[in-house]
Length: 147
View 1: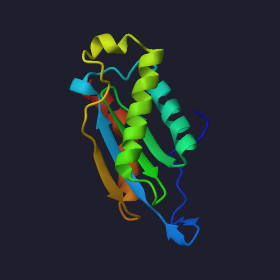
View 2: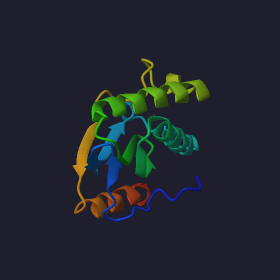
View 3: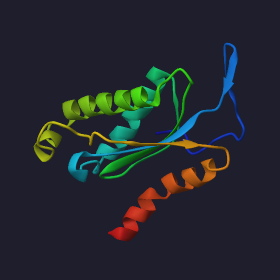
């Protein structure tokens, strides 16, 4: 991926017709049964697919990390989007695409579901944005230390 997803211009507001906004969310969701299936190149494919979804649905991914059993995103979106709908779109499309490209995943995740039903969505402010970015960027290093 060529784009530097960790670069954020400070205090940038977005403008719509009759409104100004800055809405950012830290999103996290896990694989079903916390199975560590997002590895060996599948993590990179997930990132590419999520970038494509962001372009298609007109939201911006500011930071992203795909761990073997969960995904972290920092997204910036328009006020018209319900965050629950965005997550459904991402989880649903990503699962469908992943199962098409990697049908072997269904064998590891009996029941035919890639994701756990739950998710975490946290609003991010200008004050907390740097902390969230550092947290997401540090996920791979944290995983290496565990191993």
